[in-house]
Image (cartoon, rainbow, N blue to C red; front, top):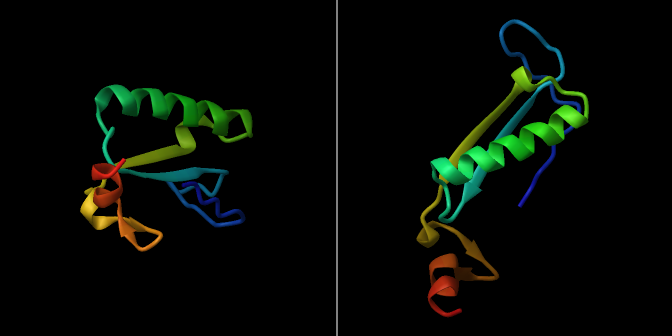
Length: 82
């Protein structure tokens, strides 16, 4: 799931230059190895769209499948009943 909010003022280090703040929520898979790959890919994408790498901030969160739901079902149920 990706949500973009454009034309939002972001101030980091006293500057309002273009920046990106990315929150990555996932059920499983949040670990050092995967985070490095995802961070590299997302940073490269934003750099290709004109944002300096030192103005891109990512936060990774591993979510418990019991705390997410879609279509009225808990993700934990969907995982258990693949």
